[in-house]
Structures are given as C-alpha cells and as structure tokens.
Length: 270
Image 1 (cartoon, one colour):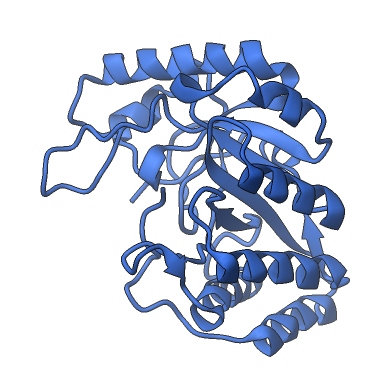
Image 2 (tube, helix red, strand yellow; image 1 turned 180 degrees about the vertical axis):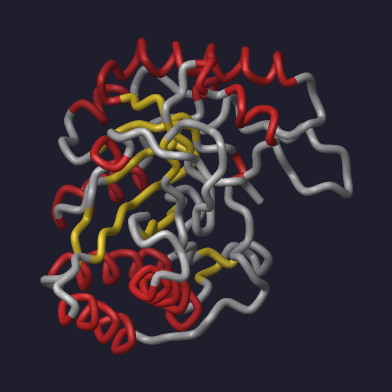
C-alpha cells in the first residue's frame, strides 16, 4: 500500500491537459520520461496476470515490487516469461511496526536499525535466489515510509536504489532514487478509483514541474499501481494512461533497470 498523495486535494486535470503538457515537451524538443511500479506482489493471481499482459501488450516496462517474506515459488516462472518485467524489493514482510496513532511503517524508527537492515538484507538474498538478474537491488519501503537511519544504512545492506512517493530531493545518501508520483487509488475512500481529474492532475503537475525546473527534471514521472485492490475504473484509467502516453511522440517509458543503472544522490525522505 502507499502513502497518500502529497496533499489531501490533488490538482485536477483532464486528458486534454495531459496531451497539452506532452505537446509542450515536444515543442521544447524534450522527452518526457515515465516509469511504472506495481506494489505488493507475492504470487501469481488473475489480476497480476492481467497487469503483466497489459505491460507486454502496450510495451510499457513494469517494475514489480515483491514482498520477500511472502513470495511463492510460482511467481518466478511468471516473471521469467514476461520480458517487460523487473523485480524490486518491497520491504521484508510488509508488517506494520508503528504503534497507533502513528502512520503505518515497516521500516521506521520503532525498531533497532540494525535489525531492520538485517531483515532487508535477508530479503535481498531471497529475491536474488528466486529471480536472479531480474531482481534489482532497489528498495520500495512499504507505505512509502522509511526512517533516515535505515536509509543511510541501505548501501551497506546491498542496495543501490530506493523508490518512494513524491518528487525526489537531493540528500547525502549515495544511491539512485526514482520515485512514483501518480497514485489513482483513493486509499481513504474505500480504495476506489480516485478519478480522472485527480489522477491526471498528479501526472500533469509533476510533468509540468519537471519541464519548468521546479523539481528535478531528470526524475522520470512514476505511475504507481496496486493490482490486488484495483477496481474496474482504476484498471480502465491505467490502461488508457499507458496507451495515451505510449502513443505520444514526446513520452518515453523507461524500464527500472535503465532508471537505476546510474548512482544518484538519493532524496531526503518525507
């Protein structure tokens, strides 16, 4: 699951606004890079099969955030058969260790950092054994939250990349950070579809901010999905968003192995 959008009232936009923003990138002679992350995978399901098929059909690479403690033997052959899919590490067990009323987190400051990093290192080994080169040394914290001390220890635990939610900000951690910025699920409203206006508002806002230089222009705009909870409207939005952007000459979908190939100063996390 994911943290909420950067504000309780996401910006609003429509499909014409998305096309207009991509047209502005084209007029400037620039490519609007995008990427796709889907969280909470542990085993093959009809919805996961549908998501992977969509990735292959449209030609949009999919980064699958897998929970190491819950992953089954059956998932590896599914990933192996899908040339557009790579694997990221989604924490260790996706267990909340925060005491109420604090926000949920698995990788927070509620436990000793050394214990958290040890779990993450074990998770890294699990995914390496099951997925080989398809598994990238990239951490996706459950609920997109991680304590600063754990972030600082990630390189020593074998990680070269980190992905949360929101525009990245430069810090001192020597690793690549590429986040997601578009979450179409209304987590506080029954996990229903957030709506075209709000979902596209997130997309257009980040693309425009990149184009104008008010956020890191080099960070690809990330779509975040959750195949286990998506309703029909969320699926329809996802397919249309992928299709519209894939067909636009200024949009370029990148794979996670491309995005995380070069070291970068990771953001100071929220």
